[in-house]
Length: 257
Ligand code: MN
Image (cartoon, rainbow, N blue to C red; front, side, top):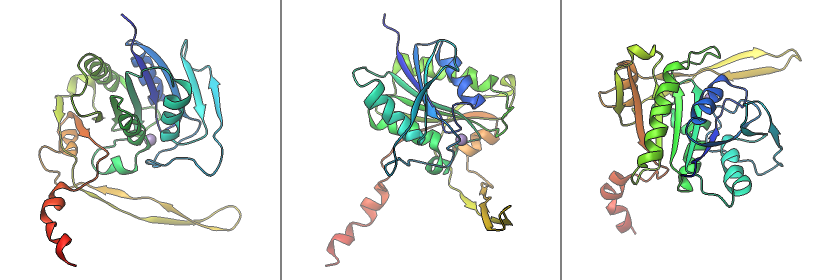
């Protein structure tokens, strides 16, 4: 049987330990092509680069793996893989991450990791974004590798039904302390933002966004609840931002004129 073709990307940059963990895991399951940003792109969401050219270079940093670093965003990386590098080939799976830090709850809106996976899902490719609840560059990816392997294997074999995108978050716990997997909905929460002020070495003022997610009392069944209770959270996600409740509840809007 032909090996599945898996594209790997992230938003922390091609040098991040998290993408290395994901590449080494995906390598066990198929042919891997890596296209990832050449620098950290966290928080870039679904941004694309259209006002300047992209620079993309092959890099030899994962043994035996075709890999490219890209000057653009995570979504640029996926578009380049799909429409340039692999334009004549069927891509079986796109995985993004493993992100340093969770992308539970509304973080999916800001996350380059999840936007890259979402972009692939828009192309009909089964996609999974993986994030570990640990921002450290020295984070232990052992548990994340374990769950990433199991989930990629499962999705390659069974697909994802009508859903094309999973947002997977792994708690910061040793593998043996993780209680299992919970299929979740996205938690409701918001950021309480703070702008830290300072003066740069050139005497110019700067402002640095330093928000904190307000997640007190996350309801059972949400991704934040799952992480707080020692589970890997999986939220089946979609790009369709239509409010179906609104579509029903706001019927009257058609009659105001
Ligand atoms: Mn990131």
